[in-house]
Image 1 (cartoon, rainbow, N blue to C red):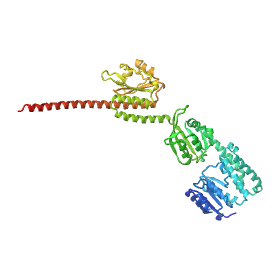
Image 2 (tube, rainbow, N blue to C red):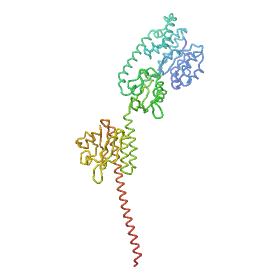
Image 3 (cartoon, rainbow, N blue to C red):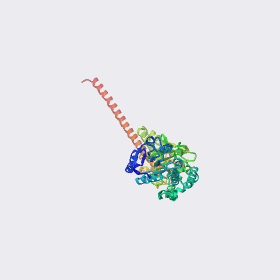
Image 4 (tube, one colour):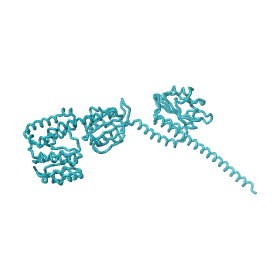
Length: 517
């Protein structure tokens, strides 16, 4: 056996603090050298190195490329891959001697180094046996049985292992207990891990598949592990087809037409997979299709910290179409309010309000009735409609003595067909005949705003709130114009008075000149 004090270990890790931590754990028993990149590792490696602890994912020269270069040397060096990446079939040809998943504890690191030193005593065939066993066990721990059975790479690995087991059978009886158990008990360990994965997937499907949010689970290699039914409905992908596929590729093929500001959903997914520890939030628009209306989704992607898929990501897609539409309408309403503040006549106010009720708020018909200053009756000032509302015959003058039109003398809340004050009058009959749903909103002493829908049996609460706000802004605008008109009238009277006074002064001045004392 080699003496520990003479064993040289090369730690290759781009995270300098992590490399120094490994070195600190090992320095009192081994000769330790550190390298912070693949290039530095190749420069530091020579025939005196017994074990290499190699990070798989490094910028520049990757761990896999470093391992390929190291195997070109005539050396019995043992290579332990230390990585946060869940292994896949690509490890079959890598040729490492052990695979440790981060995070690594000091005891775990010491254990694997002891195993490497023991194996170094065996001949090359026996070392190759343990390397194949390690690769097969690693795959069986993370892949389901169906996937393994259909993989040519896995079958080739199994055939190589069977052939080599026969070749080195004579060595097995002399193996230390620890390494012998690696060969004998690996199937039991793998079966237990496989059961754990099945239980986790069952829990995922039972709980998350009924969610109204689209959910996609991605492993640390960017492969889709699971997606729920809502994902299909929102994003138009088949969850069975995307399972096991590279999610970045799925995004580039299926999400490029889903804009999010200046980016697309494909860009957002790609960014999240390139920054596995980051959180990504955005609002995404799903354009209208022949079978589905336009939708707005709230996208959130974040890292999975614990559990079977730790190191991977979970993606949430929440349908916010109604909320987004309401917020956009509210923004539009703010712009309308600014227009109302500068409107210079009742006609301009009426046209602005009715156009906004149809264009921005989505009503099919809107009209404003204001009180005639002589009779006090409500008469139509302005109206607007969609194509569905163009055939509506607007009464030229309202019945001023019916409850529908006179209710606002003593009350200020909106009026609808369900209101007790709406009797079976000519006005209410006209509204019922023309609209599937309608509502009247007070403009205080100025009049009323009427909105209606010909195709919707009930006005949504969001539209109702916005219409209330629009009516209140209209009432303020009418009051402002009335005050401004009153001020203009007062100024005009004052000007007329001033002109009369000026004329009198001139007359008095002339009289004074013509009649000297």
